[in-house]
Length: 110
Length: 110
Length: 110
Image (tube, rainbow over all chains, first blue to last red):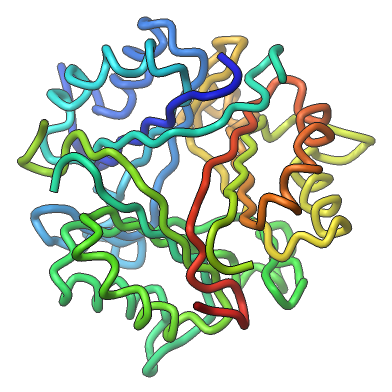
């Protein structure tokens, strides 16, 4: 798990749902079930996506669908097989990966 | 838009202004005008920049200039021509890019 | 400082402590002492780490240990010598680096 690994980031709307649950919550649970060692979710304060509607914490009526950002880091062998399924769950969002160098991951470190 | 692309991140202070508007709001609007497909803005809870003054949500008097982080992902041909102008708008901030692999971007996916 | 540089990210729990201080506050102070030009800290709203316990802002009793994310960007010559010591301070967290291209950093720009 240390050394060369992948960062996967998923951007979606707070109000998006999947199988009767908020999408970001579903994804966290799903990734845990797949054995991913850690997940971090953050909420943005402003943003727009493909529909070009600006969502912002500054306006009450547009603040119920703020951007949600999910991050995981793991080896390519664990990330790559999940990408297609994640993309299918996030029809309007953004999914990307990038290479990182992991120096510590929980109990393990270089 | 899928495959190899660039992530551009801009870090600035919440209180910075540009043309009579908060800088981060100006940038979001400006990037939309340039046809960038999506923008996400997040607010940090603590940080310092080149002036070495620590801004933190823990102290009321220093919490009005928290770090703001803006992210966009697009192909190099759309990102690169904007970098010089963005840098000019962010005199005290940080602007960097890194290569990413895009798997889904709105309606398109690999 | 411009051109090729490194982004270092550290993920830890909000409740982790180091030398009688919240760990993330200790790290910000420590990095400033090491001459790092800027630090940004963000708080996630949900996540789990190696212990597999989900911390979430949605449940009051689990919201006191939300994920904290610390970011710095600098040249490899300044980042690399700090990594081992940072890893030792973050026994349960995640520490990774990735290469970035810096276009502006405070007063300097390409």
